Amino acid sequence: MQTGLDQFIVPDQPVVVGLSGGRDSVALLRLLCEHAVPSFACHVHHGIRLSEADEDAEFCRNLCETLGVPYAQYNADVPSLARQQGESVETAARTVRRRLLMQHARKMKCRAIALAHHAEDQAETVLFNLARGAAGLRGMKERRAEEDVIWLRPLLHCRRTEITTWLQSIGQDWREDETNADPEAATRNRLRLQALPALEQAMGRDVVPLIVRAARLQEEVSQALQEALSQLPLLDPQGRLYLPLLQGRSPAFCKAVVHDYLQRVGVPNITEKHVEMVCRLLQEGAEQHSCNLPGNRIAHRAHKRLRVD
Image 1 (cartoon, rainbow, N blue to C red):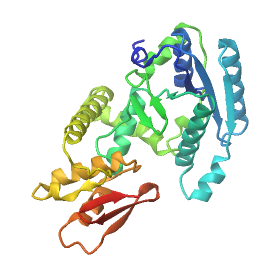
Image 2 (image 1 turned 90 degrees about the vertical axis):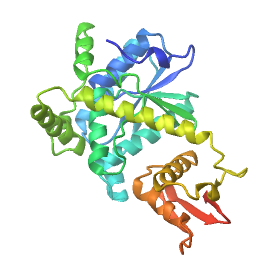
Image 3 (image 1 turned 30 degrees about the vertical axis):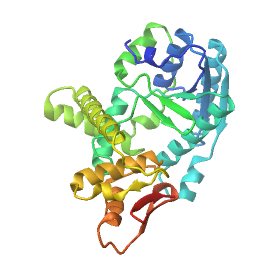
């Protein structure tokens, strides 16, 4: 099975592995072990599937004992958290999982967290972002820095069938989450079980590689744009956006600069709506001088500068 594992391996650099017990994370852990990557397995019990989730945790614990991999388990009451936050169980689970994985990585003094997303997951993510209208043709990145850790996805270009075949070839079993086969359980389930098959039927071909390639090409364009913008003297010595340099530029250029700046200062979940809100602050004669952004951040315009607190 061809993976992107080799490019992520750093000698003696330990990795925290998000281990659910499902096929993909089990394959990732086994591959890391085969490459002698020091690994710490982290399993999050979401408090959703009760006895089945208990069995998942026990499976993960036994697997790690067999492989000689340190195992840690964190328990959370995701349904209660979802109600408190007024969000879906799916979103709450993802938020809790990411927080606990980062917490465990810091505890184990690891700078890298490995996740087992594969090509079908990437296609689902691209469709999800496209249908939401918030992020355009954007997928997951193989490598992404966040605060003091780096998120790695070494299997992002592997197909689900490849992973299944490889696990079967080495005699490794895994746990099945029955909710993954329920279209009503989560939005991503409907994309995987209904939208992708419908697209394949309509096009008469396997569309996953095409969607994954489109996301990769878009990411390359975004990286090239960021590199180009980084060469321009857009920031003052205090790290604020110097607005006179945007005068006379096209709206598309201004939006690109604002989006890049918001990313630089760590604003999360940026959408076109947020970029346009900030761009309106920069217009000549704008009455509004500040606007709210995700992550409890606020953009301010003053003295021909834009800053984000």
